[in-house]
Amino acid sequence: MNKYAFTLAEVLITLGIIGVVAAVSIPGLIQNYRKHVLKTSFLKSVSTVQSAISLSLDEYGIDSLEEMSEEDFNTHFLPILLSHLKVSKMRPKYNQITNFSKSTPFNTCLNNHKKDSYLLLSGMTICFRQGGYIGNYGELGWTVNFDINGESKPNRAGFDVWELEIKQNAQPYYAPTGMNYCAMAPHKYNDDWYDTGGGYTHQSNGRYCAYYAMNNKCPDGSNREYFDCLPK
Image 1 (cartoon, helix red, strand yellow):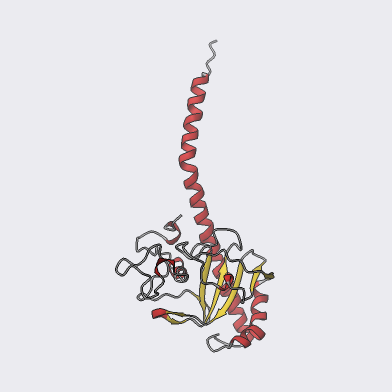
Image 2 (cartoon, rainbow, N blue to C red; image 1 turned 90 degrees about the horizontal axis):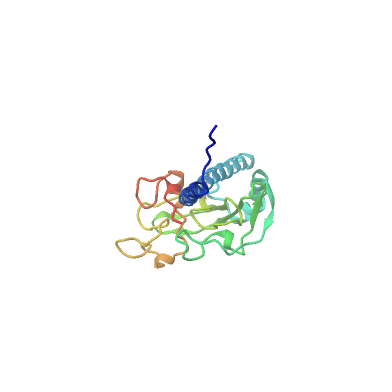
């Protein structure tokens, strides 16, 4: 009976083809996996924050944080909120978080050494702050800033770092005109982030990204979904 086998050349050619296919496809698979992790972690983190705030408002006996002073928040409301968030420990600040365009540090209380931040059992880091003004949007009031994977990279606004406005709940904010706070380049008409005066390096670039992510819209106006259009 004749026996057939692959020659060494055939085996090497086959391995070469497999290597080429792997080199082409694996980076794309890894990129898609990372985007999937960012998306699912973002949605889970938003749900966690919203649930904790809702439970805390009920327990405290109020409907909204809009009129709450910083002293009352820190002294009375925050301990209740932190108990619902399942805090592991307070944590030091880290000055690594960049804005959406990765051109300057992001304006977040996670980068602010004067603001307390907390590490949750889930691995998320979180902080709260009052005040702030965004052009045509107006006063922000209370906001929550969180990093879905703690100090792990990319540490970048609109990727793993987010800001939501707190009133009755944690929600994204956005003004359709006036500023361009989730973009990779200045606005095409006036070569700036509208009226910020900061050019493409503006540290607040990324504060509107939660709006696009929660509506699953690409901020560049294309028909792609938010996490599918994130730049590298």
